Image (cartoon, rainbow over all chains, first blue to last red; front, side, top):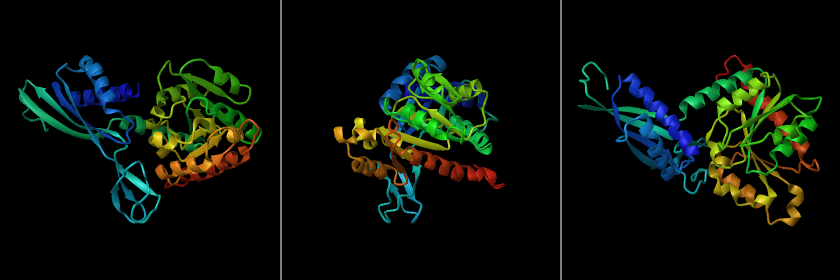
Length: 123
Length: 229
């Protein structure tokens, strides 16, 4: 359910990008899902396979990469990977840490096939 | 045939988060603290809100938006006490901002001290959706077991406070306040932990004092000219 809502948001964003780029056929969508994004990769892929063909062509591929959670300590600036959801700085033991990556689902890139020449279009 | 790759690097929920930030600022500026209440089904969100409404009656104003998959049972319970709008998701597992905005409109967009959003009972999906709240509070009842924070880390990581409810049942259930607190603090070391039993009223004034203090602290930035949230 929740994965479907995220895929819906993803497809909407890709549609806007394709329109801004002057159209074309979407060949591949690259997405990163963090360990703290609340996304189950298999369910996300299933939702994508179900929903994407209605918006883009059925040949549109999803490349989904799962990334670890990384954080920086607000006290000593130490950067580290969060293991077992332990959000305490391993160096100075401070509890105030900022998550740098891994708490979101991110659209990384969109690959578009277009029949026309792309002269004059910045890519 | 030309193929090109456009680099985007954008959060899929970026639009939703930007809209939530606008709503948070709009409500914060007029002195409304928005609280997103989350828990498993049956942890006692509505009972806590009933007790909160009784405590604040005549002193502080509040309104409630209550989310459920079906029925308006929770809204009926709260209606004699506070302005309340039921948000039915029709099967969806979490609330999203447009539903919240529709509920606010249905209430006439009231200017209140506290706006509570009682989310759908679920410790998973609601954690990923910003509803424009200033404060996120997760409830955990003693009957659920003390192993929940580690099982649902995102919910506890994204909350600022945890309220342990149904404290009167402690002698009858295998639940340790220390164990659950330790587990939650590993995930969110800055979490404020409160305990109460809304049925007999114990812990309610502490909870309401906490809300008053949060109202002052979290809305202070909107009074300053340099406030930029």
